[in-house]
Length: 377
Ligand code: ACO
Figure 1: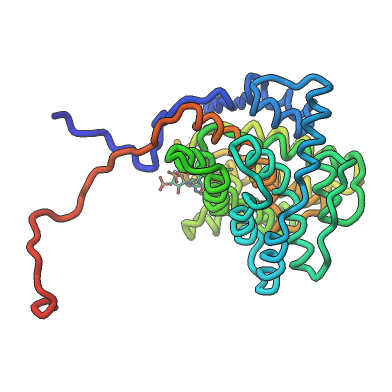
Figure 2 (figure 1 turned 135 degrees about the vertical axis):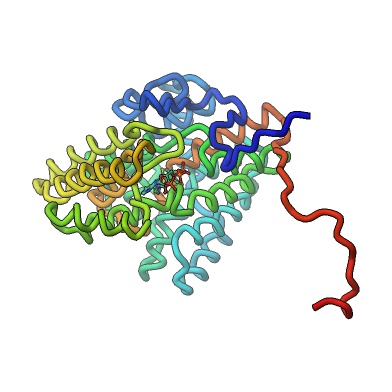
């Protein structure tokens, strides 16, 4: 029998098929349900992209109005979810942990069946994040405003005041840019759970746990901290070199699939540039560009042949910071966008109906004989 090929980290393995998104890591292209990311980022509302993922087509005007209304009607949280958030805010629990705990409660309130669960999860994630953020800072949650779109309402619930059109579009561009990305770690987690014939709320709760890690969705906070610590462009090289000499990773760089610049970084850096320009202060944006340039050059020097380029997280940090979001909100806001993609993958996996269960290569001992406890040691 030929010896099996072991793909550590499943690198290079095609673990299934999807119509939801295609990532071309060599060309630096991302397709969302047939549309280039740039088309979606420039034109779509978050509700339209969610509808597209779930239905494989864009809604007409009546369908969109109906979908927006349905999502808006499900934004309010079950009482038990709010009580949980209050209790964990008192313990200063980090927002991603609070989101993971709250996600597990979102089946409450007579939400049953895949379609209803998917809608409630997408509708309620922003409410959970915003309500928790306010509770954590001693403020009361803001009641969702059904007259506002999904993205604008998220900023409204966070800040207690309506965002400008530019701010709302900035966050909407971000949510659309991260909405789906083929079989990334958190999406794959959701698919594995769904494939056992479990429910969507369980699958999404698991996905939140996977997203939290700094090798996945937890990178933008440290990426921004790094830019702030560098402070001015002429300090970038020494700072980054010292980090690489210590064997540390530069957050916001490198990707399992992209070997060229992540196309999402292009979209988000353009959105960030527009926003900082409108705000009249380009200092941070320009500093980030210099840090990026230096980082990519040093990564080529320290890790030749690895093709480590800027990933989505670097400009996520810059854009969300420019929108007034604190660092601790970056990964939860990623989840607010990605939950639509997660649910779409769950629905696709449900239709496929095949258990995901890879094999493993055993490298433990063999032929051991049991020793009674009195004879051990
Ligand atoms: N900084 C320094 N070195 C790096 C970096 C980095 N950002 N990324 C990879 N490397 C190095 C590794 O140390 C390794 O070097 P070695 O072969 O000498 O040991 C080599 O490049 C290959 O790295 P792998 O870990 O094999 O690459 P992998 O595909 O597993 O990792 C990952 C991808 C986890 C994203 C990695 O690039 C990384 O840790 N980046 C920093 C964290 C980050 O920005 N995460 C967000 C990713 S985007 C997202 O998930 C939404």
